[in-house]
Image 1 (cartoon, rainbow, N blue to C red):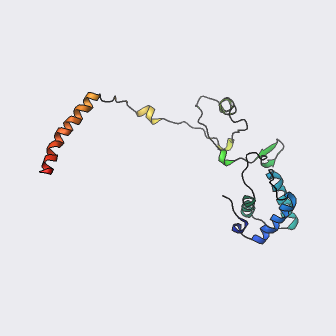
Image 2: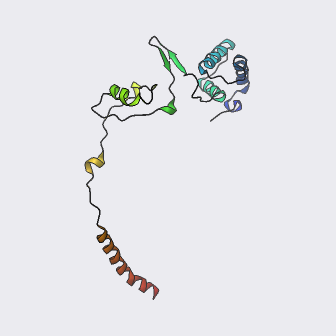
Length: 168
């Protein structure tokens, strides 16, 4: 859902930010959200403009859109490396057999198909899925065609008298 600048609040504040971003990036398409985020932060800090997190998000949603070919968005840089912002639209889950190791399963079953996939250890849930159908279902064989035909003919005999009573 794209928002217009008029829909997100204090338009004069956002228009001044928009002009500054156009001065940096021009009017063409730029695929580097990280550069936009840095330029926005620098400009807001330099001009001492107060932006709440909600306003900042609304502004960036109004002037950006999702692009699969764009650079990954950096969440933060740490000593271990760069942590990227996850795309919640691509979030998925796996049911892993109880006896399998999670990391081994991930390397064997997920990474060959999605090389940049990763596991969010904070959201990992271990449990066991009980299939009630497997445990409690008792198979009852289907009736034969002859039995079904016999029952239908018996019902037809039964109802024939009713139809004659209704008509007469």
